[in-house]
Image (tube, rainbow, N blue to C red; front, top):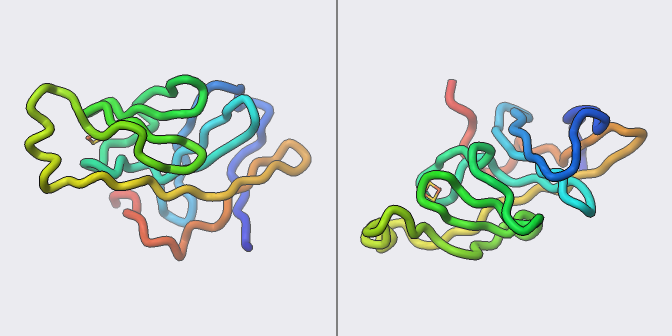
Length: 126
Ligand code: FES
């Protein structure tokens, strides 16, 4: 499985997330207590950038737009969009959808993520 260099881990403290563009695809890398995890950057609801949201309970990410919550490690929906009140009407056409996740590895303080070029996720805007 081909991996791509992302960054060195020295300046990427635990408990934060950062956006990176790999193979012209935007992803978010999360540094959790037990390691690094990666998901697609765009929320599966209406495509807001998840790096603008927040990490909850050390293992979930909440989208800032309509508060959908995803498990960072599996990409599974924990809670679908529920903010502001009334957004649930839109959920009839925007059904629950998990995030794509990508394996990561660390070698010699260097962080790598599996090449995402072939994955069918939205490419970053030009
Ligand atoms: S865009 Fe993320 S919850 Fe709606």
